[in-house]
Image 1 (cartoon, rainbow, N blue to C red):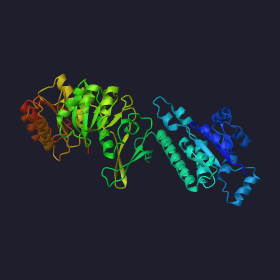
Image 2 (image 1 turned 180 degrees about the vertical axis):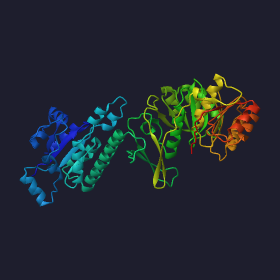
Image 3 (image 1 turned 60 degrees about the vertical axis):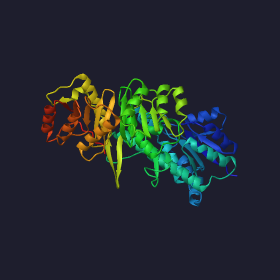
Image 4 (image 1 turned 45 degrees about the vertical axis):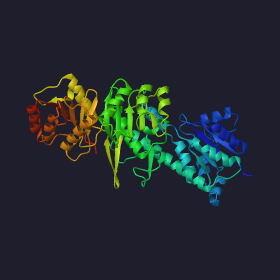
Length: 513
């Protein structure tokens, strides 16, 4: 009986020893290198060092150890070809029947904010990808395992004395080429360090297939781009509830981006990727009540986000409403006990500390292509504001204006936000004309019974005409914030001066389509 041989050399040693013990018990010979060899030897598992096979020592700090004909010849020889097997015999090379290799952790090391280029480059694996690619190319004759999660299935076949089926070997080979493709993409992106490279290489790991996409007749899935970003929803800790749907994830992402971009304690209620209310208060319960007051009808079945821990009081308030998804950086045990009584609620914990640490590009598909842009996370500071009217603004009004401005950038265009020091008063979203958005925001405020007089107004883009200013003045709006840049800016400024309103320009537009 021919003895089968496995070459094992792994960075991630999870689950390796029990798997290697299975191989040994079934009469496999194990070849190994470096730290993997030491672990197996210390665990009482007999193995042979690669250097004994190659007749050449590991050199260059271990950079060269498996790149040798006695290794790759043993991997690439096609067993059905007599000339291949003759060449192996002539050159004293024995076939290798299994490769167990996972790669240096380039992605996680290079993502560290303090990593040097030298450290990152040392994490570029050379021998590992070469071995698993060789084995994958010859998958009909060689089993290749590139992840600890694959050990259990292989061990089951081996322990039962069965051959691993060809279709399974093929799937394992496919996983290798996916892994090396993603690995090389990560290295290329790191070294190139260009936001808009000539070739766009996107590495995504499937987290789950969704029940459906935006609508039931559309298939959908979600992929992870960065496993180290704890602020990402695909890495978030779901404390309660069934998996998120496509629409849940879209709305939750919009909610997260708005809620966590503020320093002041607040609550946001999101519906169809538009905020329908934002409330400011030190107490989470009161922040939620204030957010809900903006538009209690639209809030039904919404996504609710907090940037502070949720306590028992807030949980009791939330338990009276239908909420699809709840996001916060933390929950007290008492709050969770209350919230978990709602079987249709999804509870997600997203820590604050990582938010904004990783920079992402925004991708949108068009037929046959991708649109790529930076995420709109620009925060305007008070010193950037330009007062363009006779009436000036005090510090309190500046604070309210900037709050409204940071909310309006998350509202779909044409976007209008009415706000005071406690939160949003009215929100107008997605109208084809700006004055209609103003009227819609006013209508929402009036429906909710909120006071418009004395509040401020934010517009995501310039006013093409003075009609919006006239409409805002009629209800008592005190100050306006907008980008400026219209050919009719003077007309709009004159309207403010005529009504005794203040207006500030930001020079920044926030279209959101």
